[in-house]
Image (cartoon, rainbow, N blue to C red):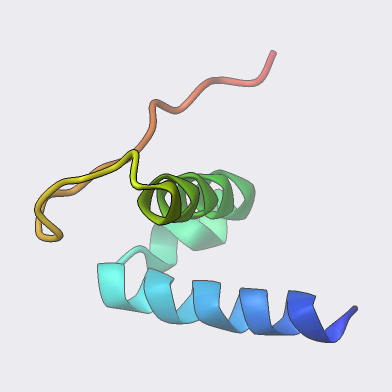
Length: 64
């Protein structure tokens, strides 16, 4: 595992704990990771301008 991947995973774990999503992350780690990545990308590009206390999650899609 690369150093940047370790940092990303450590950051994700901190965010998961802050959001109280430990059980969800245990069951669906890939989905939670994609959701966090999407929110981070939208916030850094300025496309997501909202109250930080407002919960924003992209729609989840079931895998076929």
